[in-house]
Image 1 (cartoon, each protein chain N blue to C red):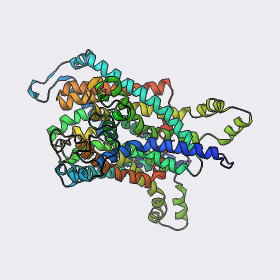
Image 2 (cartoon, chains in turn purple, yellow):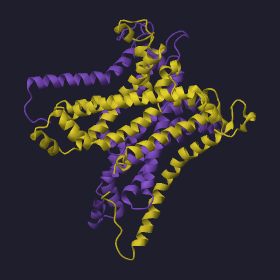
Image 3 (cartoon, rainbow over the protein chains, first blue to last red):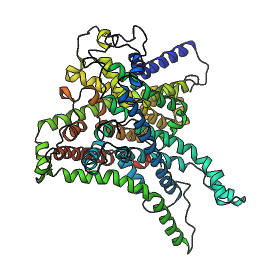
Image 4 (tube, rainbow over the protein chains, first blue to last red):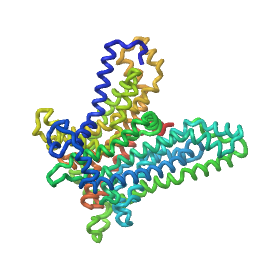
Amino acid sequence: MDTGKLTTGRKILWAVVSVLVAVYALFPVVWIISLSLKSPSDVGNQQFWPTAVSWENYELIFTGQASELFVPALINSIGICLIATAIAVVLATLTAYAVSRLDFPGKKFILTMALGVSIFPVISIVTPLFNLWSRIGLYDTWLGLIIPYLSLTLPISIWTLAAFFRQIPWELEQAAQVDGATSWQAFRKVIVPLASPGVFTTAIIAFFIAWNDFLYGISLTSTSAARPVPAALSFFTGASQFEEPAGAIAAAAIVVTIPVVVLVLLFQRQIVAGLTSGAVKG
Amino acid sequence: MSTTTKPAPGARTSDRARDETRMGWLLSGPAVLVLLAVTAYPILQAFYQSLFNYRLTDPDARYFNWGYNYVVVLGDPQWWQTLGFTLLVTVFTVAIELVLGFALALVMLNAVRTVRPWLRTVILIPYGIITVVSAFSWKYAFDLGTGFVGAWTGNPGFDWFGDFWTAFLVISAAEIWKTTPFISLLLLAGLAQIPGDMLEAAKVDGATWWQRMTKVILPNMTASIMVALLFRTLDAFRIFDSVFVMTSGAQGTATVSFLAYAQTISQLQVGLGSAVSVLLFACVALICFIFIKLFRVDLSRARGE
């Protein structure tokens, strides 16, 4: 902001502010990492750091007795969220193209409806589905979660993509055709490269939202046949009945958090653009 | 909306317009159908179910009870207590998030070039954390068995989740931590749109920092503040994950979403649970209506137009 050179005072001020922000953002994350590295006897030590770093909790969730709970849940989460994201992005791409490119009655309605769906309380969808799914056999299946997940992933995809597509200079397509490209070439060589970053960013944001779900996960599943990780976490038990499962939960939490944080860090610029241009939901 | 193809003038206009309408709906149709199927249908079904005395464990005893479920729910002090707590959490967290988020946005906007990208990276981390994971982290930090907060505050025997107000504070802290970065990014986008020369002019004219803030910056970003406020309010009002993980509704910390869940999924009282769900939906619609009518939130801004 200020173009003048930095005085020592301002340097110190910014250092302090940056450290404060970093502590704010990282403290709970560092804490859960620390907790995941505590051995079972250490979990209750009431200290922030472990007395000795132990990988026991990670062994417990990948090969130990918690693995029956965790590994299928991880596979469920990845599979269900990827499918729900893919369907949403394909449908949203068609819709966003129509909304940003064509002029037709009802397109305001479509956008407003997407907005309306995204503020819809999940529990109001869960109650009827719980009953219906048990009757038609979709309870505790992948499909039984993919369908309601679309209520999370589709609206945000429509918005984010509509916002991205509005910024595309569509005239370039005609320009390419004037220059002798066939319409397929114009689409393939001009529009796809312009549109794909938006589609990709949208997919990441939609995936996060599905990955974050908890309520559908605990309500519409009952076994490891379809239960996703956030829901499975609350079913963890300690090595014995009286032991806190905190260490195993923390380790599982870290495993599901790392890929998302890596994605966020790699694509932060695009994600921020996507979140603030079209979408307004966390 | 400048990129929209304008229909050509003349006799072919109507043909062209009809073509575009058909194409538009053909492309949007599948998404619209899916959206209707996953929301309109369930809420109608929930409303229908809410009119029956219906317990899943005893389906034969199901009968239409003329909306008596609503009388039961609205006549139960537990509903009002739950609604009160949900409103308390909503107002408290959103208010703090707004102030904190605005401060963070100002920090990011004014940060020197060397720290700016770094700050944004750090700020995005809480956004990437799953709500349930954040809830577990905060829970274990304060928990009697695993927490360090007791030892750090010199009160290791204090049960933070054993009392309404302390449980409320921890739940709110977890929510605020997780969602403030998001709100600050929205506000930053609003801040960045304020023309720099406008601020420069105010500065030249001798406006103090406070005057620039209240007379130039805030009035110019009411729209983005209101949109952020609307969406965070609706989101906060539906709070479920943190409550489930931290207290399971103990000490009067059940929220409306949690109550609906407990009724339907835990107790299999489908009729009563559906009634709570429908009432929650009505509350969300009401909040939305109040924002749009009273505060004149322009939704086209939210749509990114």
